[in-house]
Image (cartoon, rainbow, N blue to C red; front, top):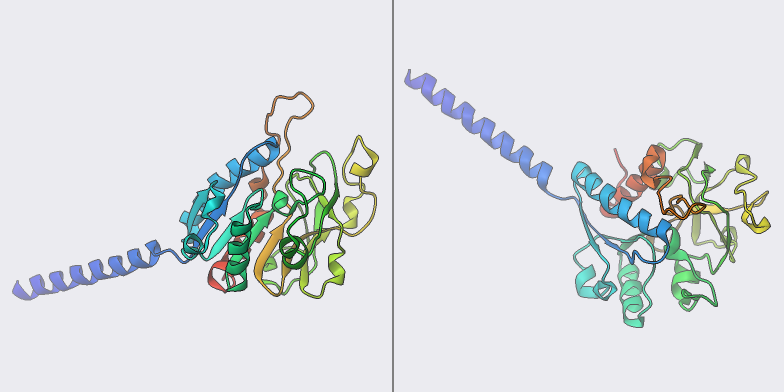
Length: 280
C-alpha cells in the first residue's frame, strides 16, 4: 500500500511538472508587437485599422506573441520602442521630427517594421507631403505616391521572390482581398537594396473601373509587397477595405483579413521579424 502511495505521488508530481512546463512554453510570448495608428479621415483606412486591431490579437493568442496598440505617436521614442521587437504602422506615419528620428534610430539598430497601405503615402502638396527623404526614398525606396486604381478591387498577384521568409509556402499567384492599389514615382526594380516580393500579375489587367481613366491600369509593372535588404522591414500595399462609397452609407463591403493566403504572408513576415526564423 505504501509503495502504491509513493508511486501515485511520484506520478502526480511528474504530471504536474509536465503540465507546468507545457504551460510555461504555451504562455511565454515569443516576441512583442506594437501597432501605431491614427484612425481618422478616410473611412476605408479606419475600417482597416478597426479590423486589424481585432485580427492581430487573435493571432497573437494563437501564435504566442503580444500585440499592443497606440494612437499616441509621442510614444514613438527610444524608451517605448525598446519594449518591442516589431513595430507596425497601420495607416499613417509620424510627422514630428523627434518621432521620425526615434524611428530611424530604432530601425538602424536592428528594430523591425511592417507598414500597411497608407503608411507609405506621400504627395506634395497634400496633408502628407514628401518631406521625409530617409523614410520615403532610402527606407521604403518608393518615393512619392503617383496614382491609384479605383474602386477597391481584388487583384491577382505574383510571388517575385520565393527565397524570402515572408513568401514561404505561398502559391506562385493568388487573388487578394479588395484593395486600392498604389503606383509610385520610383522604379523599385532599379534599387539594389529593394527585394520585390509580390507584384500585380498581368492577368489582373484591366485593374479598376474608374470612372477616371488614370484609375484603370491596363499594363505596367506594379510592386505591392517588398523589403529593404538593409533593414528588417516589409511594406504591404494592402490595407484599404472596400466601402459603400456610391450610396454614402460607409458600409464595409470587404475585409482585408478574410483572405487566408494574404494572412499567411503577414504571419510569415511577423514570424521572421519577431524571431528571426521561418514559420515551421
